[in-house]
Image (cartoon, rainbow, N blue to C red):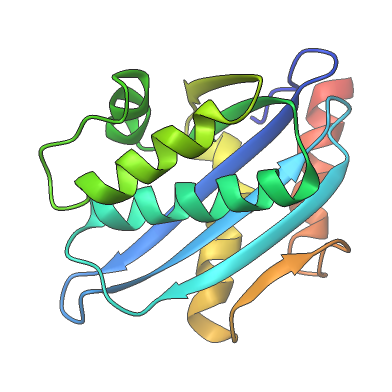
Length: 164
């Protein structure tokens, strides 16, 4: 499951969903401290995007904006999309249609004193995944400091697994 970041780090989890027929998507992001405490989250509708990788890159950009607003210094960034992580580790260089979004993300990430990009599995990314799912049903909420009921059990689950 979700793994606790090192002391003094904040962990950002991002995820996206993509509809191939409508060329639309949704994104979710959540920030937690090194004890697993919820800091802030958000979910967004993506009105238009060309492919799933671009949707994932846009989710990352949304998440980085949250981290900037919170004023994070040391950030570990998790996505369950390996291509997102590889692209960011490679200086944000992408040949795909999402190239400009990845470039944005790279420059935003450079503004933090310390960032690490780490791939995580689906299970470890379930809170961000659920937020991306909520965005399909609800109006965009780009900032909330109190976790909504839908994700509380998932957050508790994650922290319970860590402490056992």
